[in-house]
Image (cartoon, rainbow, N blue to C red; front, side, top):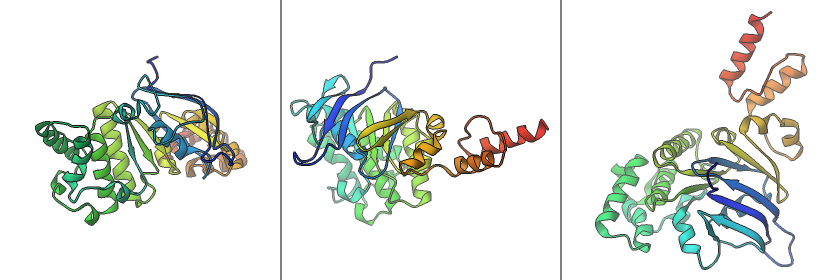
Length: 279
């Protein structure tokens, strides 16, 4: 197995000294090119993990490594060159008067030569299908278009890992689908690792691995299929489960034997078809 791209070891964090811990001895790793979804109810520590990973905050105890570097105030700019973040509200990330100015901002801060910068802006906007909007004002774009620009701004600085912190939460179903398709394509093309902090179950289904947080602790970890096979446990801590999982559970409750854990409608239909054909 490759050396982990991200490593959390016994990480503990609280926002104020007089408040309880938000994270309690959290341990996990993320491999290069892996897609990991982090889920949990509000206040479980998901977004705190994202901020720690990018050096926006630092743990009270434990250690975090990204790309072989320990996250600290001394390494923060090196860490941020490896980690790109896309937040829920893209308006909070815009600093330029035009789309291309916004994508250029991070490159200028890193002292990228002008000719190289122009090329990166063109490539990153093309990669997210926004090259025709280079001279548009960001605030005049749709929600999905804004997120595409936010992703382009992150991709322009060539990170090794992209964190989506509820990045599709404010989008309609079509916009959400388009953004996830964009991320899938970029992941393959650039060989990125992806971390999604999300409540969207379709987003979770795309992941290689899922980490379930509960009250500041890593509660479950496994593939989407493994996680959703623990539907009763997920419901106990207030998490939703996919519609297909709900239907599968209902069928089992009335005596229908369904082997394994279907993740989508096609898999469930195939299992039911196989079951009916053997009778």
